[in-house]
Length: 71
Image (cartoon, one colour):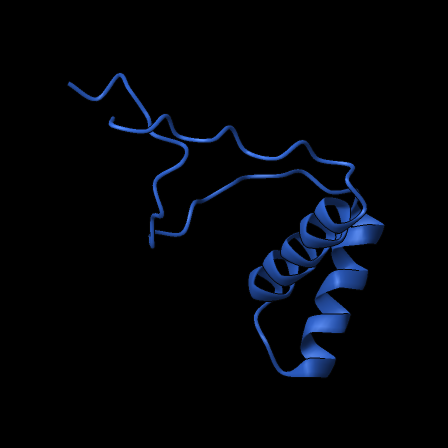
């Protein structure tokens, strides 16, 4: 029932991801977030999103497969 995922679907649900950072990077990120008055996780998500968009613009990430017509 849940074994197929349509990666072309425009989902509005945010996805969660766990990542491990070196202590120095985490503490720098925490200081940066504090300086901007935002949660550390929110800043990390923004940085990842910005990096992915930049990589897509530079064609470093292949485009998503196109959905077949009539399906």
